[in-house]
Length: 359
Image (tube, rainbow, N blue to C red):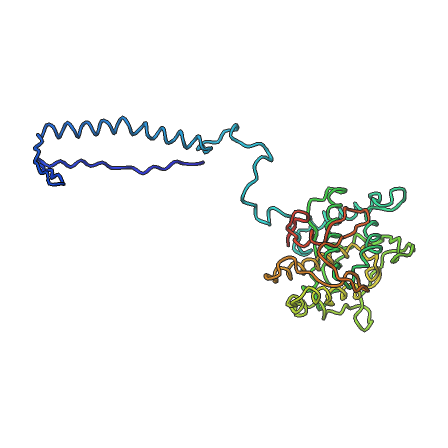
């Protein structure tokens, strides 16, 4: 409510029993006022004040109201939707959805996310409508045909950022999922990744046992989804942790250029350590792919926050893995019909108009 504040004014009449008025310019005279005359003047002044003050206040209030202010809310004064934009944007945490780490969300939220993934496995394909393919299988298809070309090059992170956004949006539009994507922070169990809660049969990714992957890379070869653990020496049963330890990730986040950051080894440790389908370009058949890449996106977001001079547009490098052509923010992110194509600059700010999420 708008309020009108007025300062109270005090009027004090001081009358001396006798006064002399000296007139400048050489003319001097003394005028003696009678006591009765002085009282009459004081009463007249007070009467005028009583009469005129309310009128002055009323006129001021009318002018204030006419300027568009009101100290009461009425439906007539409310603007139509879309007519007025607030000058104050809500905080990011309320304006955009927050993506959270798998272990920090409730069991109910974990089940909601898993249900959304299973739902996509039952929805018809967007890309190949006259087939028995599913909406979920569209994602490994696009990744193996388009996304593979971004590896070992500048577009790697922005392409996958938009890919994740499309996946999240499809969960909502096809399956009514209301949450955000979740990520797997491998630094929390880096010395024993195979014991991470994401592999828990009950509270992890147990429900995806038995998923059939139609393709192995670009070759049609239906098979059961496979996964395994191995270290850099090829020994089975344990994932090497050195490239995803807190210390190693701290070093990566301290890198000064985008080319250095995008070229770090933090991405490769998990696909190599898990093996199976995760090691192919059809890796999105494994639902854990999306938790892994959301973690990579979170780390890129953290790195962006540490670049105050370059801002959110710190970007450079080669356009493709085997190309000498340099990439730019105006290059296109191609989704080959799964979603509208966008520019790389459109996805550089996660809290921007297109993406609108935070970590």
